[in-house]
Length: 218
Ligand code: 5RP
Image (tube, rainbow, N blue to C red; front, top):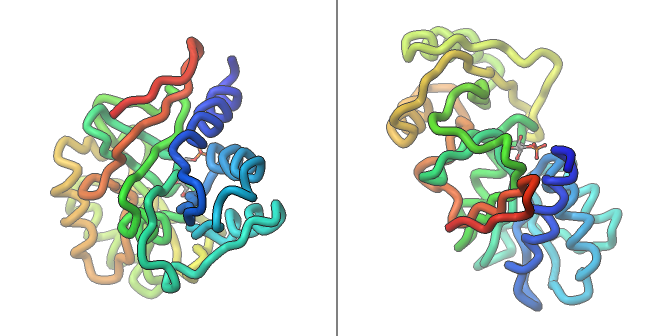
């Protein structure tokens, strides 16, 4: 099985968590693209979706799935999204696709976060994948200096503007032993919109594609 086949298998398995006549929270990325395609096969059974990015909104709409504004939704049972890294404690690094802020907002509203991923995403300690931080453009250099004080090496993601009109700093060389604490510390830097640590609100269930099949953990 290729990595993409493992992503697809995990995405299809996640359909089992979707209840009839509900609005589904949808993340962003290549694994989620498989999920959106799978969701299209049951589109007449769901009310619609709430999306975490312009990219996912476009794909959902192309399949004829109605996309609701999050402000019009009172409750969201399930949010399905991928991850760049995930630990056994269900803490994640996300934001490889620069959609971290909207992902974090939709995840905050959802009762359950279902993480779909191939097994290359499983790690013991977060930080091998550079931590994305969404920053207000005028604060970029200041935030970068503050991130250096926290022990990281921030790199400006050239040419990327987020759906919210901001920029991304990817922070290298962090060994993240206390993800909840670091999530709070980085979010406290003025000019940071949010960072890609999903530890305070981690995943509830991991649907992991492996070469031996799909495992459901949690
Ligand atoms: C986008 C994300 C994605 O979930 C993460 O980057 C994983 O992507 P992929 O499914 O393509 O491996 O956080 O901002």
